[in-house]
Amino acid sequence: GAGVSQSPSNKVTEKGKDVELRCDPISGHTALYWYRQSLGQGLEFLIYFQGNSAPDKSGLPSDRFSAERTGGSVSTLTIQRTQQEDSAVYLCASSLAHESSTQYFGPGTRLTVL
Amino acid sequence: DAKTTQPPSMDCAEGRAANLPCNHSTISGNEYVYWYRQIHSQGPQYIIHGLKNNETNEMASLIITEDRKSSTLILPHATLRDTAVYYCIVREPNAGNMLTFGGGTRLMVKP
Image 1 (cartoon, each protein chain N blue to C red):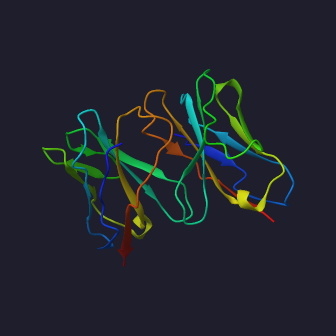
Image 2 (tube, chains in turn cyan, green):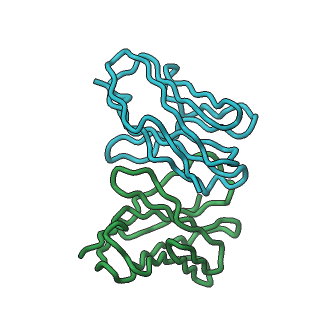
């Protein structure tokens, strides 16, 4: 079956521009997670959506970062006024509601801020 | 989450079984053993998990000792595409939002 998909796969932008990253979770998965991973580093949690509950935004590094999840499915991560330190691979994962330890990851979006 | 210990690296010949060990001596009764891997330049990939019985799926087998203090992930016929960092974690099935991985084992499958 279809896995988690993300778009674009690569994004190059100039410092100060806004970017939007998209995630399509596995159908039926009510939990959706955003992480980022810098080169050679571990996963950094950003935000978590579960059903209609308020998202857990505790991992967002600054107010330039925001995310939405419309209709309980597709999610968009927006980074405003991008900085060079935002360059990383942004990963989306989804899971069933009560199985947060079994997360299925998308291929990621590689963001490069020049 | 309970702490796990894995060897930092292992080699395996292509076509042979890769046996990746993990120690988790402080595992609690509600915690499962999960395995993920991360191939270079890709996102993490869930492999398998288990509580106390041995488990098998299309990717791998998981052998958990009777005292649950250690486990082994077995890739029965390793291919070059199995070269990756393999992470063993112990968690309850709904332990919270974020996954965190330790150092893992860097498996190199060689021709």
